[in-house]
Length: 84
Image 1 (cartoon, one colour):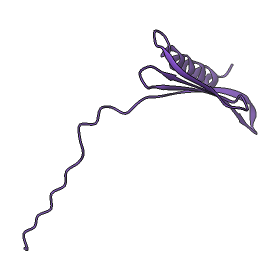
Image 2 (image 1 turned 90 degrees about the vertical axis):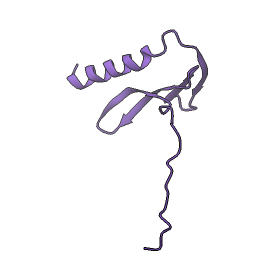
Image 3 (image 1 turned 180 degrees about the horizontal axis):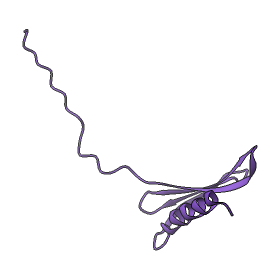
Image 4 (image 1 turned 45 degrees about the horizontal axis):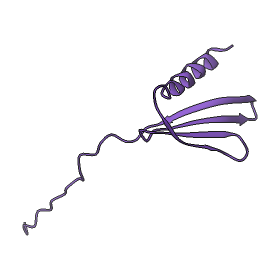
């Protein structure tokens, strides 16, 4: 096993660990079975995908999509109306 695959396994394990003690509210499997999307009760989404390329065998990929941090408000821009 190469170092890159060990790194990938650790990243996938970390993403899947977020499922612990969380409720899954929705699960969608793509029709070609290459992607599984799990929506968690806190709004985060875990994507498990099979990635294929011409250079090697298929590999498993995982991404945890988190909601953005609380937005404090909109940016206000004031224009100086002095005719200087």
